[in-house]
Length: 389
Image (cartoon, rainbow, N blue to C red; front, side):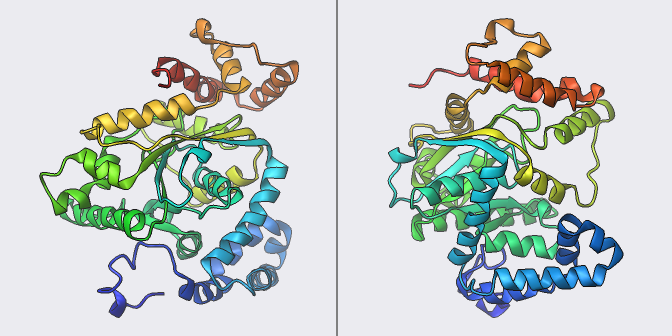
């Protein structure tokens, strides 16, 4: 890891992704991390991990060292991930389509801001689309609330993630942390010419409603405003080359868990996550069946939008206009019985209906209305969005 003596030359050393010269040390640390080894064996060798935990951890450590023995750079690490991604697509995704990327200059860095449905898969699919097109992958914004374990932090930063502060205490500390984050984002886009992916809001859109938080826009332009407090906000947005991205899943592997959380918040006012729930959600998202997946890249936002709210509204417009509605969305709206005028069954086959009925039958009765709303809400919101210009 970077030493504190390097901090003046590397002002973002504690939030930026790892660099090539940090890869070997980090992989060695991961191969000996007892929490990571225990987590891996629980998922991959559950029986052995219960009966012979020490042996199972030894086997996991050996497997990590074998898989990463020739990995000496971030690119090599991501190429190894790409192989797993291809395998995952074949086993858990029926189709993956990408639109709009061909309209973006391959030599230009962009700040991709997308709707947020899955902790790891949203940026992973963006990266996979870029990889297939022969383009450089993105640096990924991830909240520090997800980095409660050192091994998770290491894995994420190896995969070009940078840290979004959400746990800083006090207004001054939070402002300083966000200013550092804003300056890093600007540095990545303008100086390194390296693209970034960020979610349009904190936390996944568990209810299927994709809406941009204007506070994200304010944070992005903090560094620009610090240089010139009178500079128009649109000038800072244009300099970041902000491109909205829509990702649409036919089925969400975490939909039942999301329904359970939505119900708890509605009835009890809060929901308490278990210790390993975020990790379980990541695993479920990667391995669970997603049906068809569609990714659409929008167009860069220009300087004509001069308030955070106006920029957020334009992101929402592009995200919703780019959202692909699958049969599951219309079947959910039909099942709820609301907005019948929006239900379009013209592309719904009997196989689609049978698959939907099977999924719904596996949802506990008390969660079904919450489950259906996740899929129905995009139909309602897309109908309210302005048509693409």
